[in-house]
Amino acid sequence: MTAAHDDEMQFVDPQPAPSTPASVYDLATPLASGSTVGLFANGFPDSVAFLDKVETALAAQLDGANFVRFDKGNASRLATDDEVAAAAEQCDAVVAAYGH
Image 1 (cartoon, rainbow, N blue to C red):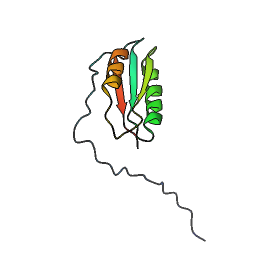
Image 2 (image 1 turned 135 degrees about the vertical axis):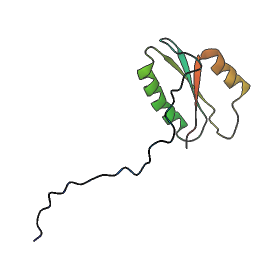
Image 3 (image 1 turned 60 degrees about the vertical axis):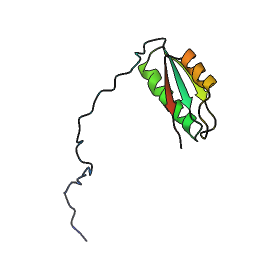
Image 4 (image 1 turned 180 degrees about the vertical axis):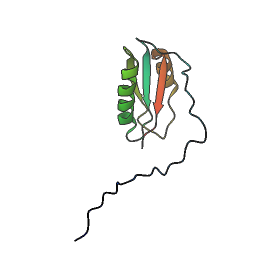
């Protein structure tokens, strides 16, 4: 029979301290209640699902924001001029997302 040990388990974080301080990201377009944010999926698998999470996170921070969805549907093509124009016309800001 072995004796019980009173040693505590110790966890070590292998990550080094950051080499540069974090910097605050300032939006180029200030967003307020009632702003419209476009969420533009690029057509890769899970890009729409990822934007679902982005919308949830942004909605929690931007009270009263509206969200408009765009989806290229095919990651191998560029967004069309009509898609870009629609996003620019309807939205105060647009988040483009990659999935995989």
